[in-house]
Length: 253
Ligand code: PGA
Image 1 (cartoon, rainbow, N blue to C red):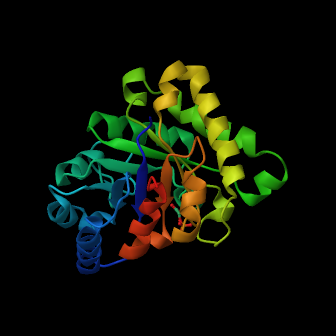
Image 2 (cartoon, helix red, strand yellow):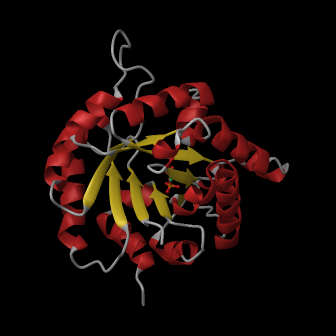
């Protein structure tokens, strides 16, 4: 049995005050949720300390959305993995398509971020996914394989045991166009096959989350797929009821 996760990627949304309120709202209702999923929320850097305090001792874990490539020094505007870990956060989203697209993140830089993440005891949620053009031209398999191999294959076995992968087709992010459950399963099984080629049976334990327009209405169907171990949720994670309803997609009934 693999661990199941529902992770909320808040992106650049909420003020610290609104973020605290959102987490409190999630916590108020989480007791009523029958989900067997682990919940993670990833607010902006500015809220991390405060939200870690609010979530301490609860079922919710906290993550950041990015970290610096370097450990410290003259890198104006950057936030190191050590700083993130010091807030009490335990996860970091790395390689999100918005960062690859708008901030030019490449495998080289992501390898450095992975180093920082593991050296500071954080768990990376490593995102991969193809664009619409890459899917339509049949390049999707090569693209995703390269994103996995160029970064994940540099991990040690010990590190690999603490990795979460998120498959997020770029064409499904924030567009309302969700991949079908079959499309998600097909790519998740492929990613697991690529991971197995390098890490053997350990890959059977790696949680692979689906991301891209996950909503309460489609979560259960996607999460029912064999190789889908949860979701990385953007828009719908900004609403406490929707976020928890997505987790209920794992309800065993
Ligand atoms: P979305 O975003 O759920 O709003 O499509 C997902 C993500 O980018 O992680």
